[in-house]
Length: 168
Image (cartoon, rainbow, N blue to C red; front, side, top):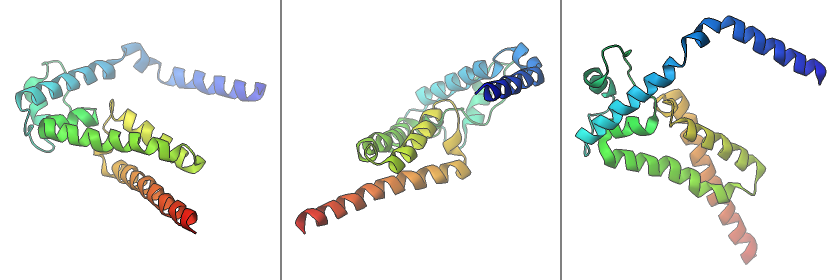
């Protein structure tokens, strides 16, 4: 345990030294995200039914960003991105699909350790979507939706097996 603690301490120390200049500048990424989210909300407020169109956050943000702010292509929040792109109907449907699927699967997954592990990973990705755009990237979205569908199917398959066992 001592050796492990020493290795972790050394690694953290080297990480801190390597990125000391970045940490000294402050949390610019956090401030920038608040600008992105504000712009996405403003777009959602001005275009509540259809949004600005798929993949057009950058166009909206260019008009709404402060002059000193850096440019961004995405809102860094999957839910606000959907709202900005597709309006309230798109935002609500997306949130129901993601958060509703996660919530619906909790009871089904809590009894099986493998399913629970997958569910925890999906829940983490869904929560991260509030501060990042992981589900906007196809290489990350495909495994998420594949595993979400697998869990939904695993629950349906288990229900069929249970019904057959009860009737047999």
